[in-house]
Length: 431
Image (cartoon, rainbow, N blue to C red; front, side, top):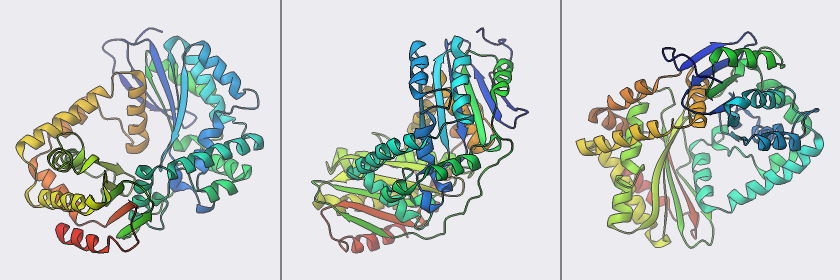
C-alpha cells in the first residue's frame, strides 16, 4: 500500500457507522501495519464470583471461531511472518496483530472474526482453565510479584482494583462457559471498543475495511464503576522462608485524567524511576542495601497508586524503609533540584520518542489514548506538557502523595506483627 499525502495529518479519528471508534496513524516510512482491538473492560468490571473472566476471554478468543481454528490462525500468520497477542489489565483488554502492510486485510479478517464470532467452546475453556491456574500458581511462587499484588490488595481493600487480573484459583476453577459468554456479550460491544491501526496505510481504506467486517451486536458503552473507598490496610505480611525480604510501600495516587499527572510522572522518575533516582542512588549505590529498588505509578479511571518496591536482606528491611520514607518526606518538604528536574524531564521525553519508533508502539499509543482519554494528543503536545512541569508542580505532587492512604506489604521470614512499629514510623515521616 502507498502512504497518504505528505500534507495530510498522520493521525485520524472517527466513529464508524457501526459504532466503533477508529484511530489510525499513517507511517509512510515503514512496511508494516499493526492492528489493535481495545475493549474498555477489564478485571475491575467482573463480579467477584467470576473474577478472571476478562483474562479467560483473552485466552479463549485466539482459540478461533466456528469456521476458523486456532491452528488455522497460527498457520495464516506464520505464512506471512505476522504475529498476534493479547493482554488484560484492570480496566481494559487488548488484542493485536502485526504484519506486513500488504497483508492488512488478513489481519483485519482474523481479528474481526475472533472479536465478533468467537467459538468459546467448553472444551477450550477446560484446557485453558488449567493453563490459567498454572499461571496463577507461577505468580504466587514469585515473591517479587506477590508483594506488589498484596500491596495493591491492601491499598484497595474490598475493591476490584485490589484483585489480580488473573483472578484466583477458586474463581477461575468455578467459571463456566455461560459466565464467559455472558461477560463477552455484555462488554464486547462497539460502544465499549476502539480499533487502532498504525503503519503504512490510508485511513479511508482502513475505515471501510473495518466497517465491512463488523458483524457484532450494536450498542454498548463503558461499564459503570464503583470508586474505591478512601481507606487502606496499613500493613500486610506474607510469611515465607525466603532469603530476601520483598518490600512494597504503596500510596494512593491520582487518577489518570488528573491535571497533575505530568508532575507525578516527574516525581516518580526522581524518586525511583531510574539509575539516577534518589532511591537507587541512596539505597543501592551509596549504601549497598539492595540489588533492586524502584518505583512505579499506576493510573486508573478514578484512582491510582505509586508503589516503591525493593528486595533486601531481612535484617536490612527497616533501614531501607526508613530511607524510602525519608526521601518521600524530603520531596514533600523541599521538592526537587533544578538538575533533578532536568534529568527526569529528559528521561521522560526520550521515553515518549523511543516508544513511537515502530508501528506496534504507535498503534498502542493512539489506541490506549483514545480508549482511556477520549482523545489522541500529538507527540509534540505531550512533550510540551512534560516540559511545562516546574519544581513547584513536583513539590505539590509530593505533598498530595504524602497525605494519601498507604500500605506496606512484606513477603519474607517475618511474623504478622513485625512491622507494626515500622508503619507508625512511616506515618510520622510522611505526616
